[in-house]
Each structure stands twice: as structure tokens, then as C-alpha cells.
Length: 105
Length: 239
Image 1: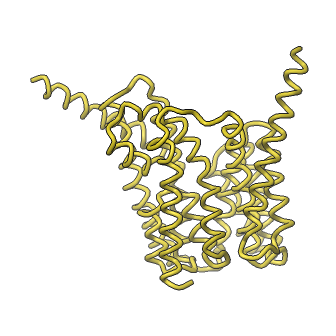
Image 2 (image 1 turned 135 degrees about the vertical axis):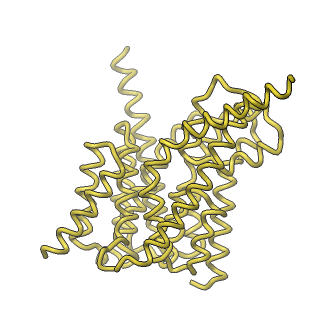
Image 3 (image 1 turned 180 degrees about the vertical axis):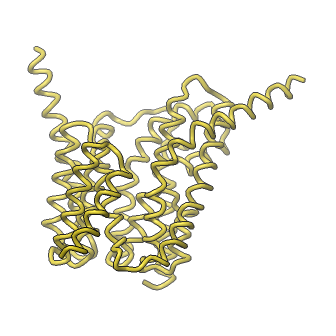
């Protein structure tokens, strides 16, 4: 990625982030969003973050980019996150699983 | 005398804001360090990737931007960030009544700092209004901005000395998966996450990481449909 492309990308994402935070505060002081929209927006977080996880695990190499050790680490992290309800514990458990498997295999 | 008293109460508000803000920052520490490491691994020049702290200031959007730079086009990157940022639209919608009695400059400046933690803190302070709420909001917001940038910079410095065999490149995916799980509070949320992941998996060969968008849109639709279905079932049971 060239420096110019990178700067353009960062500025564009920055602008989009600002607009999504400021839009309703600056322009629509008191008018609420339609309830259907609010309802759909609730599921944006889980949908996009899980899709992003899958994409990052594949690393741009399609399904062939997914390694067994990565899946194992992810599964352990998900179980720990669900039971302990703690992001740090999930990260530590996932990375420890990854290191253990890389060392064993 | 009168204005002196008011200033002192505002100073108290700054201290109160910092006391409330610090505990919520602790869970962001591993995220910030992971982002710092991801910046050193990024396909972007390091300085540009670091500047996301100042230009974007949103952990998930920053992490997506620097780690997708290698595989995504400008359009996919921006569209992905837009989708990730949709939760900010919810925050903006929820907080906009609190901004209606605030000065214009603050309506423009305040939203820049609107990260998850700040929303959680300031939306709860219903007993505050006017200058006091503004002072609380800005104190906590600036605290997060400064500490976040320092934390990510620390991750960047530490990260560049960590050998690649440690596979810290996997950490962002684990972080996002953990965020998904912690954000799941109801059945439709689980449906949205599962459909988002599965559709993205099937659509992995869509070029330029376009599968993220296909997965995200499918997940949102699935979550919405499940939510409507659950509500219908609940009303049917009630009647």
C-alpha cells in the first residue's frame, strides 16, 4: 500500500467515524430514529464483528488461509469469553492455547 | 464570589469524571496493545497507521483499517469501517437530547470523543446538565483520547521487538471474537453473529475482503428477523 493510498484510507475512515458519531447530535437534535432502524442497528455489532473475525483468520487467502491452531485458539477464547465474561481472560486463554499447540505440534 | 463557587464545583466535576473514567479504561488495555502491534504489522506505513489514533479514535475501526490494509481496497475498507461505526449512530441517537441545550461548538467537538466507554459514562449521568455535564463529558473524553494514544504507542514500541513466531497477528481476530461474545445478550444477537460469520466464511473468495460486508449485512437482516419473530412469539404467548 502506498503512503498516499494509506493516508486517503485513514482520512476517509476518520471522516466516516466522525459523521456517524456527530450526525444525529449536530443535525437532528431531538428527533428520534424510527424504531425499525434502531432495532436493526442493535444487530450491527455482532454481525460485523463476527464477519471481521472470520476474515482476519483467513488472512486474505480464502478458506486455505485458515490454520487448525488458529481455530483452536479462537474456540478456546470464545468459550472463555462466554463463561468468564471477560475480554482479557479470553485473549490470554486464546493466545496461550495457540502457543501451547505451536509448541506441541 | 458567585463565579468562584461555580468554578470550584466544575473542578470537582473533572475529578469525578476521571474517577469514573479510569476503571472503564482498564479493559481497553489489551485492545490498545494489540492495536499497537497490528500497526507495526500493517501494510500501511507505520506513521500513517499510528495516525489513526488522531484521525479515527475508535478502536475497532482502527484495528480493521490497519489490519485490512493489506487485502482490501479503499472502498471495502471505508465500507467496513462505516458498518463497524453503525453502533456510534446508536450512541449519537441516544445522546442527542442531552446535547440539545449545549452550545454549538460543543455539539461539533463533543462527538469526536464518543467511544463506547464515554457513552456508557455520560448517558448514565442524568442528574447532570448544562456546563457540569459538558465538563464531565470533556474531562472523561480527553482522558480517554490521551491515554488511548499513549497506550497504542506503547504497544507499537513493544510490538516491534516481539518475534513473529509469537503469532501476535492472531490476537486481533481473538479480540474481535471476544467482543462479539461479550456483546451477545439475546437470541437474535446470537443469530446475527452466527449468520455473519457463516456467510463471511462462504463468501471468503469475494475479492478485496468484500465477504465482510456480505456477511455483516446478512447477519443484521437475520438478527432483525429473529428479533421480530421473538417478539411475535412473546405477544402470542401473552394473549
